[in-house]
Image 1 (spheres, rainbow, N blue to C red):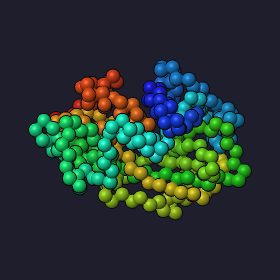
Image 2 (image 1 turned 90 degrees about the horizontal axis):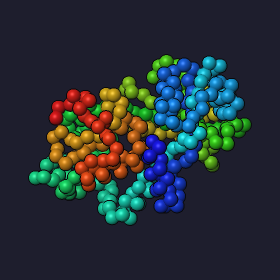
Image 3 (image 1 turned 135 degrees about the vertical axis):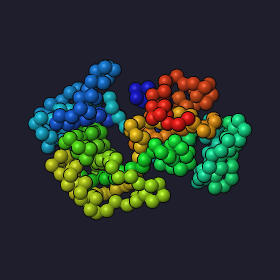
Image 4 (image 1 turned 90 degrees about the vertical axis):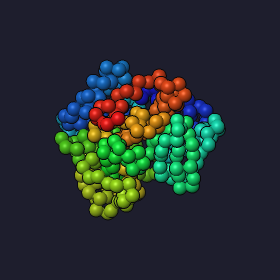
Length: 318
């Protein structure tokens, strides 16, 4: 992650604009393995951090004042987050400036061998390529076939922006956060600090129980879902927010059995590299993964060892 952050910073220098927001990172839990594991990893790899008791959490971050007395917090002063829409726009713009040909509003429908090359069929024609990198998210299973169709699931996720109370108090550099308030998967939320001029705060959860399908994904959020989110994840847990949802959104996580990445050659399509699924936490790595995959395409290997993300760990047929 430290290496990827340097790439984003280099992009910012090239375009003279911001794609990454410097914001501390904060994890809080009553007694949770994730927070303790995060602390242990930070110590192992020399990441600057602080461990906060409940009193320190309340003093420094008024929005988290409702934490229990038994809570502990992991605080990373040099954390931050990337802004996806802005990052995608910049990545495409820089790619075009460096000679890439961008084909937008065109759907890939099929991949097949073409001698030592690959034929890419779209709804507008076909392309012959020496090498193909597929990062198709929730459309990966249908496009790539086995073993991906057997490995990947698609989980609907809901995102909420709650209106700020008039008297809400936030620290000048409020952190993005993960809040763990119980032992179950449903007892976790995450969010980002209010952005200037928006008068709202993003809070969301992750769920891996209910599966969806790409073509039938319900992209609407109901009033009942908004109220349930406030009741279970906000009220009595995060101060300064109203029940009113300013906006909401739906996305889908493409999930592997172990919730990690798949980055490997397609076992049945020569010269096709698959970079999906990323199980909901891939975007922040996209700059570094892009560099590594470019190295693999050009030189046959990358500076970063990506073998941990191979299909072999699933004993997938090759």
